[in-house]
Image (cartoon, rainbow, N blue to C red):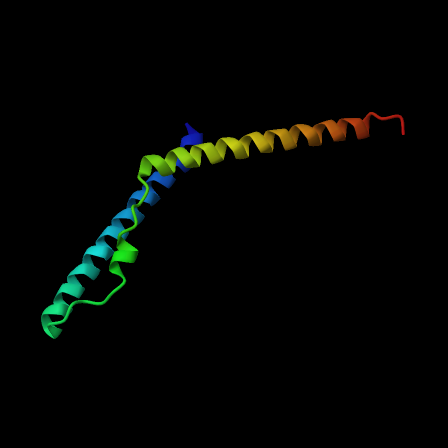
Length: 95
């Protein structure tokens, strides 16, 4: 079904981005641990602020995208209908 193609793309993009964020956070944690071993100090970083955020699941993002797509489709259909009505009135008016 052609209308499902954007949703599949959104899901794939979310999954890849989530994987990149998780990998990045793991790398930052490992670098902080290495730094604390070398300096014998507690690591001072912003990892908890950056990596402590809970990422939405692919399902959550897909559901939200579907809601937004339906709203957009509804508004587009309504706008199209209004435009056709105005055009018909203009074309078939007595003026």
